[in-house]
Length: 317
Image (cartoon, rainbow, N blue to C red; front, top):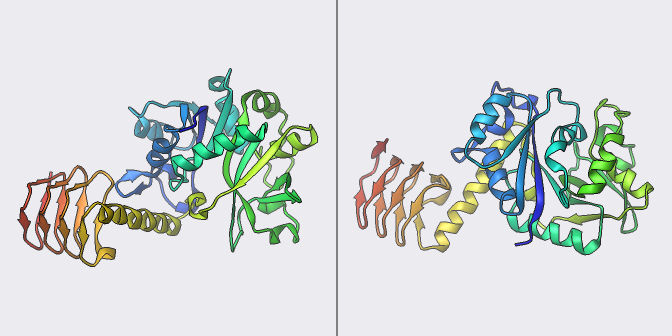
């Protein structure tokens, strides 16, 4: 797997639309904070991970304890470029800097590794991941002339014509370390939001004659950012669907599969059968050939091979 020097994870935002006292990146998906999925992904493709925290910084730092990341604090949330600036001390000497958002848990390591490889092949100073959306509302639009990238325009600053563009910014960037650290201080907050946009670096690169590349995701679901409870629920359902399918491919049977909940930490043996409405949480291990009856709830349990667990069983520890 192709790896880069450093990844910066942006996790300082409050997440106002979540309507919650909990920092957005700590909202759970299948039993773990959403940011844990992002950290797990980027650590496969980056030698060092720096997480920029801000709102609820102490809570977020506690949730990151033991994950092997460095944190940087963005005291005021003044935009994405401002957030990356908070991590600047940790970026010195980096060949490349990958930037991702802490609310995008669907990103895959293989996607990011391919992104790094294609960035190098293009010889770009800056690359951005994009995707095509049927409804691009709320996303920054990719401005092109033919295949050439000219810039990224945020929704609030886009003209009526630009808002018709369906290719949008997925919020994942890869920079040459030298280019990023040289140009980051030049970003200005002259926009409708009064914020320092990381996307302004695209225009700087184009005007300065640097190479800019944009690669479109084959699966736009990877780019989903969680901004509200609906998106949180949608992403959890997609991840749960994929998790069930992976276990089916390993020889597990699900009776009325859409009703069954399990977490990524659960381990299932071959020929396990899970009845309808079963819930499996935590470090639960189900031995080969075991059958778990309908409506059972098991948390941090070990079920031996061939065991038949009656319906409506509740065991937790």
